[in-house]
Amino acid sequence: MEKLTREQMAERLAKDIAPGSYVNLGIGIPVLVANYLNPEDEVLLHSENGILGMGPTPAEEDVDYELINAGKQPVTLLTGGSFFHHVDSFAIMRGGHLDLCIMGGMQVSANGDLANWSLGRPGEPPAVGGAMDLAVGAKKVYILMDHNSKDGAPKILEKCTLPVTGLGVVSRIYTDIAVLEITPEGVKVIEKLVNISDEDLQARTGAPLIF
Image (tube, rainbow, N blue to C red; front, side, top):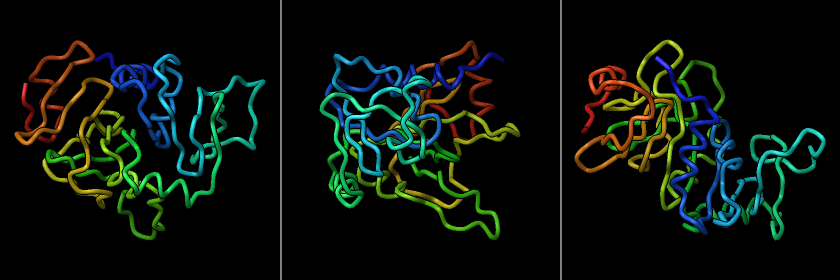
């Protein structure tokens, strides 16, 4: 079955960001969203290491390793963008000043619980970073991830089996095959992004879907 590329996933999510929003982009696929925003919408991108006003990914000749995001990837800065101490950055995150946070995910439950920092393997050091602060501090959390893991296991489940980042924090899930919304009634299919039947989409998902 044909699936969306990571770039196509990011482009699809970018269409749903309201103009004028303050948005944090997480490490991984979410950073690609910066490349598909309309400058006229004046979306302000935040990085937890202390940047507000990030632009799209720089061209190779414009890379400056003094200007990086929280994932240590080179970024650009728009006119009016700013740098500040990470304490101030976390005050933005924890203070409810972000309209939206876009993060990757390992698992999302039917009621919006998020697991995105540990596979629970013995001996792994804790490395949750700012994910917990973002998950509970942002007004909305959108998850951008593959629908299934590399071995085909569903990443959307009735209940998370991995260590949880935040409880009931996820609003929407954007995958390589569908857009899903977490509602009080359960996981609702907003849009199928590829040619897939309802039955096949349900078979690839570990929680009941509402069509």
